[in-house]
Length: 322
Image (cartoon, rainbow, N blue to C red; front, side, top):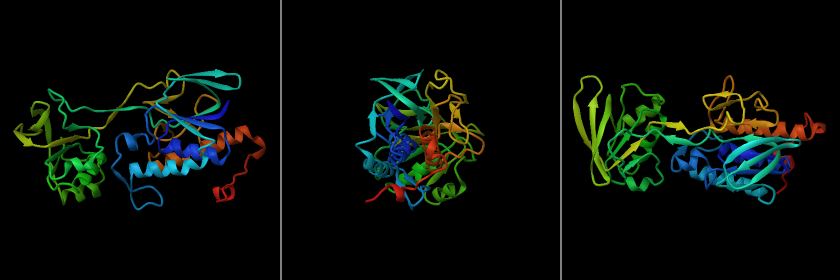
């Protein structure tokens, strides 16, 4: 029987696994995708992250590689099982029986670090799906010297627009309002280098076969229409949460988020949660805060397993001798 099963191998889950290794807990990680990183690799692999402590900037893909390298220290003690989704959680005498897509795992504690679950992109409402209308960007090189339209007004839209500008000078961001949700500094940085078109909504895509040649747009105020040509269209309308199992697991929460206390305990004894999938007063959705929550959760589980060690905390420099 495991001490703790960690659900999710995103940045929070990977750090939780590392902390479990430091505490010499018998742990395993299950991840529904076929690679680690969560949204970092599934959606934002080539984007740079600027708010990770200790890094001036680092790509999402490289950061995930660094986390896996850090966790490799405990490769003989902690395993990651890819393509494994938690389907059912059943309470048993000594803990829980977790049924996944491929196996049944018994564990004393559970730490949910699933980032809020699987996310599905908000689709562009056009008459046909074209191959060059993109919701995920995995290769920035494809945009070199191309004409690119970016749709959206949030941080992701502007981040992608700025990233694409490194490969082509012809980038236009289209948004349905004159105001943006993105931070002003990013907006002004892109405005100084790229083109912004507001307030326009998309009427339809114009295409030839499976390739879109551009978009037909409508001005949100005066109703005038125009056509913008494009080689690629990158859509950043956000994501919707796919069906969550949180209700099935009888965890208190709201809008797909799990309520936790200061120890990262959920409403079900023995089940902890951390990362972007949790909520509490003052919650900030950052990688660094999620990892702090993971450390708290693992220490709380360790204290439950070893009550004699309560209030005793050893730092990594005391636990690792290279």
